[in-house]
Length: 468
Image (cartoon, rainbow, N blue to C red; front, top):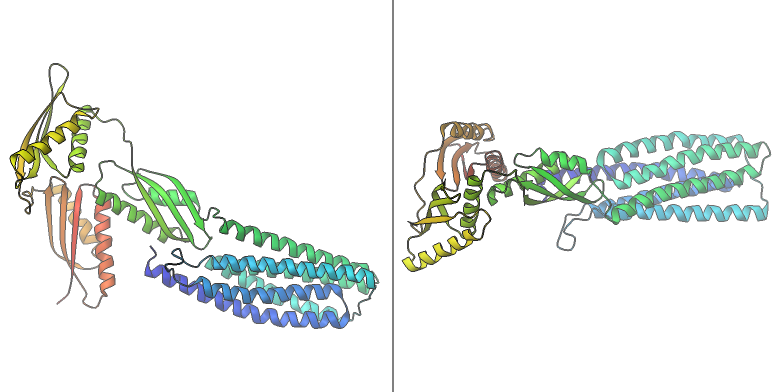
């Protein structure tokens, strides 16, 4: 999911792209008018060809403006990924217009061979054509820089257009010089070269646009893997896929975490990966992170027995404590534990649950030879008594909360040790002028950071209140 800041940056990028296209459109219209008037007045086919190519430049600016207007629309039910690919569609249209222009110029070359018409040139012709060179160079530089800075397909495609126009104009001047010297065939030859340049530009634009429409890789996998791997709690990253456009990529990836991590902690790690990808990768609009349990190095048998028993209890919604595993002379193991079951149940129902638990334990590879369970009743609506948190861990947690409180004052903090892990409850005072959105973001970032950086923490609750 995109953040408000990303939406604001995107809107600003579109506004800048529109401004650049409007400036370029005005410049291209002036250049196009001058070339076509001069070409038809003198009969120089190369000049007419260059004028048509500049006309395509002007038309592509209009297509670009329309495409950007559509592409900046926010996502909705019909287009849940947004309208970004309208930029790609606009680039495809520009490529198609180039193909049409190449066809028209090629047809004019064939007609010239049949008519034998001779261009009428003068020094003024050369001067007017030469004046378009600096205009084209300024347009190309402006669009290229803006396209790279904003990541805009339309601006980059249009800049390629203008670059070809610049090269073509230089070639046309050379062709006109040949005609001036009496080499009439050079005009048609240069016009043919114009066609080749246009076709080459069209191929590049169509190739890139087709790649984005067919879900080619849109993000750098190495960068995605590096950013995700830097998140605390991530043990491995694999199966990275991306699609979209260079400016608006969508990524999904698989992340491996410790198999003992709670669902809440794993969710916090996934959210942190998504946020870092959106903020650090630049072109990633959204990321989908799939959490997988990592296969850790083989632990001692006693540790594995304890881990497996806790996994079974968690799956049944039960709690266990006072777990003791001891080896017996015959090579087996005796496990003693307290199985936490709701006290309101009857003895028969509680015993049935314990039997189910013991049956599941018997099916695992690390099953003990003997299992003795003590049924521990717990109230339905009261938590088990809290235990004290180790001082060194408590100090680290308090320091992390104070450092990430968004400049606010930590009024109160409570740490509790439960069988499932540490619970953190903090009350933080912020400026009364801060928006509710900003205060909520601070609280969410603090909660996520604690869950990611402290595997011992099971639950975090942050209360924000205004200064009196």
